[in-house]
Length: 220
Ligand SMILES: Nc1nc2c(ncn2[C@@H]2O[C@H](COP(=O)(O)OP(=O)(O)OP(=O)(O)O)[C@@H](O)[C@H]2O)c(=O)[nH]1
Ligand SMILES: [Mg+2]
Image (cartoon, rainbow, N blue to C red; front, top):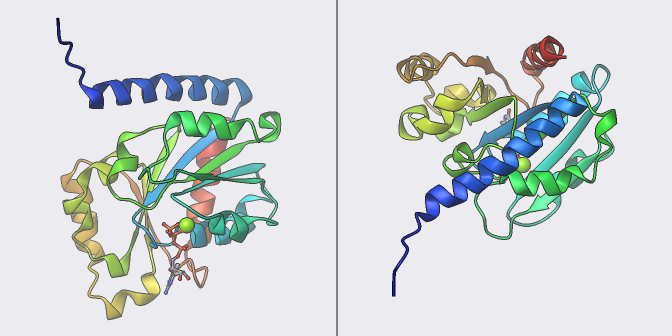
């Protein structure tokens, strides 16, 4: 009997690449700009989306996909704000993959979308390895998480085109050093745009949204 050894990691990632390529072709064909919003749990992804929709929906036709292991709580928070929202439950998986996104895309009228934002499952590790065909990866880091996270979880930050530093309203309580984070990003070779904000109060959300709108229009 011959035993064939399969590298599961390689095969899972190759399968993801295949689905990501399909999604990419669909986004190109329909003129959709796609964003992968990633962070650890609770850093403020859904709050950022809640506040960003006020700026984005008057200018762009948006669709949102939210990923969580369980519940439809995030989708419920975002519904009724002028953008269709689809919730994916991964039932244990720590990230969204390209095939899951492909399945969710059938719930949208793609001809009507300019911008698709995907809120990934809260996790600083796995989502970085699974692209779904997006144009931009955006990482959120909130100040209470500590300013060592770029160094400890480099992959997500290295790959991100923008880093949103959220909960800036708490900065003086949690010893967060923004300069250190900027330095760590540079050391990774990152050229990410950095947007300090407090999504809860809305501070800084306009600047990030204006930048995002410019990115969408550049490719449109
Ligand atoms: N003080 C402060 N709290 C914030 C801010 N942004 C979000 N929060 C709070 O942080 C908590 C988590 O916010 P969410 O938006 O649910 O975080 P999330 O990243 O979507 O969380 P998961 O989807 O579970 O990964 C909530 O209680 C928010 O009110 C902020 O700028 N400042
Ligand atoms: Mg959320």
